[in-house]
Each structure stands twice: as C-alpha cells, then as structure tokens.
Length: 280
Image (cartoon, rainbow, N blue to C red; front, top):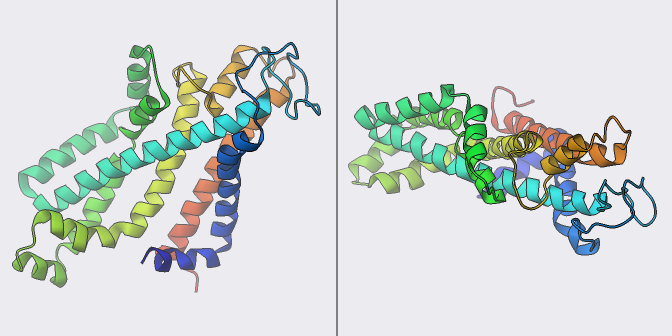
C-alpha cells in the first residue's frame, strides 16, 4: 500500500529534485562521520585556518575541524527534526481523531486546548522552557519543539475526519460494533495517510528551523554539535565580521538547502495528492 501511494511522486520533477537534495544531506549526516573520522571537538594549534588539504573546510577559533562539525551537525539537526516531527504527528493525530470520533464534550475540550496552544506564541514558550533547563539534550530540545507544532495539524485532520465519519462504510463499521480504537485505525487513519505524510515533512522542517533558532540565542542542546550550534559559535566569535566565511557559510547553506528541499517535497506531494492542484 505504501509503495502504491508514493509511486506517483517519482513522476513529479519537483519531488525528485527536493528528495534528491534531502537524500544527499541525509547521507552526509550519517555516512560523513563514518568516512571522515575526525573528532569535531578536538582542539588543535591550526586555529582559524581557511580550507586546506588537511582541513577541507578550515578550522574554527579553537582549531576544530569545520567539516567534521558539519557532518555531525547535519546528523544532529536531522535527528532533532525527525524526533520533533514524530512527537507532533502523534499528538496531533491523537487529538484530531479523538475529537472527530467522540465529539460532544470531549471534542469541545480538546479543541479548546488546541486553540490555546495554537494562539500561544510557541517560540516564546519554547524559549522560556529551554531557559529554565541547565542541561538540554538533543532529545529534550526535540521534545520542546514537538510539543508546540501539532495544533494546526490536529484541527485539519479533525475537519477531514468529521466528513469521513458521515460516510456509509464508517456507519456500517459503527453498526457492526467496532470499538473506537478499531474504527480509528481501520477506517479513519488510512484516509488521512497522505496528508499526515505531507505534514510530517513540514514538521521536520519546523524542528530543524526551531533548533537553529534556539541555538542561535544560546538555548539549544548543551551537548553535541548541530547546525544551529555551529552558527552560534560563529556568531559568538564574530566570524562574519572577521571574514571567516568557511565557518558560517557551510552550516547556513545546509540549513537553507535542507529546509528548502523539504518545502519542495511538501509542495510536490500537494500537487500529486490534491485533486485541485493535480496537473492534467
């Protein structure tokens, strides 16, 4: 079923371009550290060196290899994006489907909570939570970001499922005595699979951008290396003013390329799966 669903995507040029770029960075993040075995935290006397044969992307103020940092940073940022996306998708799916199935007081309560989270300046809440944590692991940062991305998705799938609930085959399932859980997984979830896939891509994008934003203001992960942390180090050491382009350009371009590829993928999926936008 999954292969049948994604097969039309590979006929779309936008999807192929976006997916290819994303895969390149995915391979860089997971295979780069395997083949380029340089410790990204090791300090050397080759500090602030421009790109050279010994350091292909140069070194920072502490003599740490930028290319090694980039490979590890891409992997960490993608991990945060995926983890935040999973958290958002699970919360949004749970609240949206439960609201559509239960309706009444349950629906009103869940939608009230959703509206509160939706209207709350999530980035400010994330900043407040992160600022109170002295130690922030990659997983904690992903959790903070994932907790505030889901409201629009929950509202969207609730609206879709409310329409699905009025269909004849769903009514037959209810008459047959299906439990709410069975009804959700057998009759409702399959109808929003493509939309959930598209939303998951956007959630990854939001997680990567969110981590970069938190890291730039010093509230990212306290351990490890990410693309946002690389930019933070470059800003703190005034790499832009001092012309050390090899320090801030690679992580900056990586963030732009990854997020742009995800947006292209999402747009292509919308064109393929949305009948109104589907090209004849």
